[in-house]
Image (cartoon, rainbow, N blue to C red; front, side, top):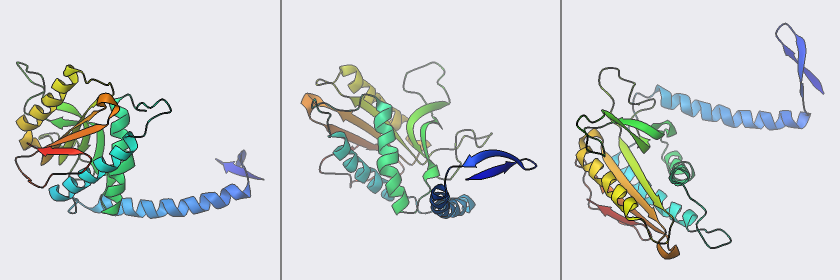
Length: 233
């Protein structure tokens, strides 16, 4: 056992065991490699590897693998998820991040519940807000965000909005909110390269994932998948 020095050498704290030191050393090596990668990404003024076709490919792939996770039920045969945030987090950290790693993309481009500029909001107002909160935001550069430029807000590279229903019969209100997402993307399409409106449903205990792709800047006709219903509008 070994005492740890603090300040001018006062003995405070204890190293639990020598085995912990070995584990910490191995972990430190892994963290050092990760830190070097992060420093490399931080030194880059932009992320040239990220493109709309590549993001389309990753979103389709991530939604496909997300389908396999979400169709797993609890012992009572019903879905294990109940909140939209649970699905968004699983998609981002469990599926999209892995694809970012495989393409050497900086995961710091991802923001959950991020603020983005908007020309108009989802609800008609006399004076719409200049910014909106969106489920999953993908930026063009590391450390980008709504408030980074004090004069002109920075537009995101892409936005992914989600709606979730786990009931046997999807409420018409949730359907309407999903269509509001699509309309918001259409009205704010110049504020981003591409947008995706995802709708996860469980009608009659059958999982269905719909994703509508919206982009005026980078239209695409190649938007299809086997298990996930993907459409372009």
